[in-house]
Image 1 (cartoon, rainbow, N blue to C red):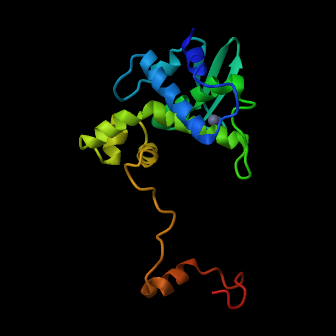
Image 2 (cartoon, rainbow, N blue to C red):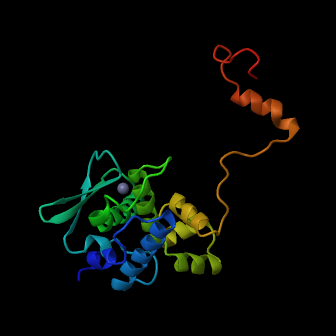
Image 3 (spheres, rainbow, N blue to C red):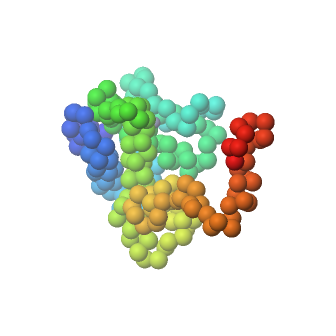
Length: 208
Ligand SMILES: [Zn+2]
């Protein structure tokens, strides 16, 4: 059985909960590393580009960072030529998950009130890419050995600083970045209100 089919065999052919989908994505990533005998960072992109029936094209002006199609008897993964090489690496791993999921894609991920099927698939493909390029055990080992600076970890794993920050958060090694600074001291209030005040013409009387 070829590698892609071995990875597909890990996934049950039925709708998955979000936690099941994440767990399966991680198992598939781990299995790909095992099947290609990669056991330390940085994971070489060749484990994807050298898969049989997979071709990669760096396409100028691509509307998204990556796209995948079955054409001419093989999977063609297109990566945006203008993207940074580290982003292309992550997109390549993300696109591989689309390839793996293809036979089940019409029913694997279920929409809910807030998330469409396509959005759910995108999130899981990103998660797969993170698991493949930054395996849980390797990141924890590196972090535990004292390599804790995001820039240093990003270099070790061959990913962007943003990607390693997301992974460190997923693994509970750092706190999620706050969306806003949180409650302010009363003394700061006038300054902040001034900063976010809407233009007078748009603000209803007494709004601020
Ligand atoms: Zn995608």
